[in-house]
Amino acid sequence: MGAGFKGRREDLRLVTGQGKYTSDWNLPGQLYGSFLRSDRAHAEIVSVNTAPALASSGVVAVFTGADTAKAGFKSTPQ
Image (cartoon, rainbow, N blue to C red; front, side):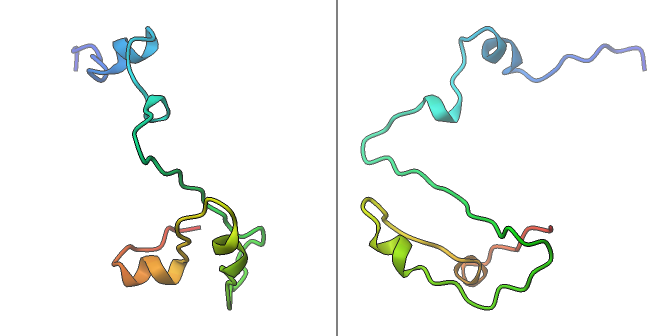
């Protein structure tokens, strides 16, 4: 008690425009990710057809919940 909040070390440079956010970086061979979530609350997804996405121009990979589970990632709660 009594000590003032000092904030995070990076706050000043970010709020004064001197810091870099992840969207500020452009690297050679850089890829972008996107997430598509269900538009139905509490629905059970029984299958996902990733073929159309994989056939799209510029798409390098498509990952489903099954893929991330195999890689050891835990699902996010709803």
